[in-house]
Length: 177
Length: 177
Image 1 (cartoon, each protein chain N blue to C red):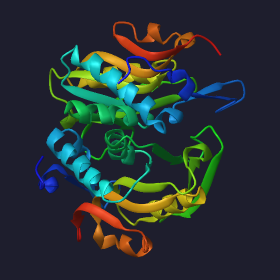
Image 2: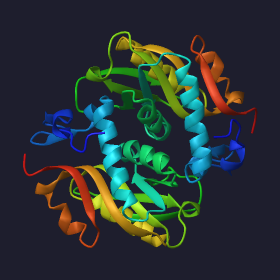
Image 3: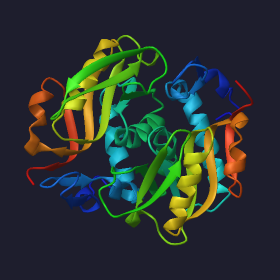
Image 4: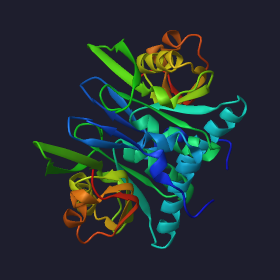
């Protein structure tokens, strides 16, 4: 496995999606290229082995695509964070503000253990608002966020500020549109 | 890796979810048990190796959790099928009828190749309506469905009928509520 891979080539940039003026960074081009996908999971795996992670968590739904093979490879529990009303058991819950309106994510109480050392995985960090809420949600359950790992980081949206205090690692950064 | 595993023990049964009278089979209990999760992916992998699969496809979002480590392990392209409006590029699309109302799923045209031999992966088969639509969607793109593999099958909902013509494999079947 190469230590370096030109991921940028696998990321499609689609203008005016989901609305005019927005350039969308699409990671599905990574998933159809096994070399690109393997590179991402390998990088996440190396990062995790240097911390002593005891769980992988992710917010639906594209995050699952990266978190799941990582949890499988490292033989670690996989904790799913989902939108309100999707998880059937007893949950912890957190509300948060989005650009327009509010949202809410939940996690099964049974899925987190007190003191669990968690790596939070996502495909892309934009404003960081959802990931910040995810950290608070996992902490509610007694989890400790050892790090946040995303394939893509949209640095120009200043997510470092909202995620202050959490170690953040990304594989490709975009500085502007 | 054991050839047999009591998956039923890892599947939580939650009554009256999402509405009164429905017993919900919750697969998140598999994900937090690495042995159970490994067993599922290993079984899917063995099944795939007997066909000559050239792509793994899955409908959001719980399906991604099983399809993704399988695609990663087998070094195969992963094709995401998503709800309408989520995929930014040019898509094929299919509408289908649900118990109440209609739904629509899409796939990127760029993600399927003509003649691609696809294994469709999901967490659970209930009525089979969404998976049937997924098969038709992949066929629209020139794909050939070699099989459908789900962890859980709710046999009492008669999904075999709607999925007739497609080989279906499940690891746990439930015969009634």
